[in-house]
Length: 193
View 1: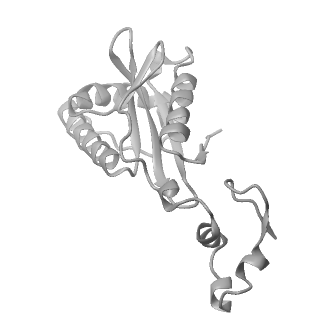
View 2: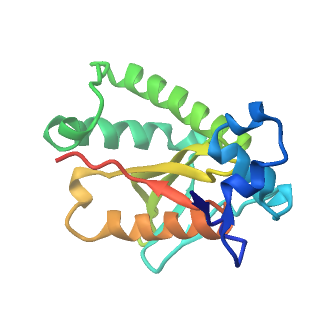
View 3: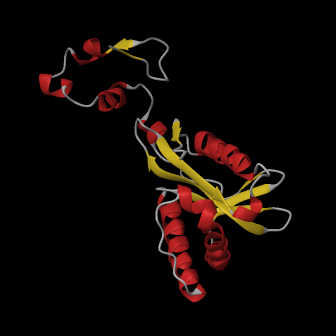
């Protein structure tokens, strides 16, 4: 088979690349072989040192979650879950008492902040710039470096904010961030129908 690494002008044959190597190496995963023979420096496969913390359009701002978002996030999620998010979300056992809902949201926000700092996930609060209100969430999760340079994208918008193209606009902003800032090559979006 022929391999077409993105940084190469000419295709290279897998057989030609592995002919001089021990036969055990020929059994390695093709993606590892691509990485071994890819002419790009290893830095091309690493996460950037610094990433911007805010992305803006005329209507929206995407920014990392802050601990101060926990209560608004909790209220938005709890009010949007029944009938709106429930069909598309993993089963949730939402606490019945608001104080417990807010505690669970604080834990979620803390995990999102930690994952951001470690470069594993980039979960953004979707903020309506006109009202400064948190109206949803979008995340680039399961980031894989190396040859794959990929992640998943998931999002939701509160039930009161649907029908205005907010999710579509947030996805465009997040895609730009993924490809241009994080230097990813692939985003996977799973859609429930």
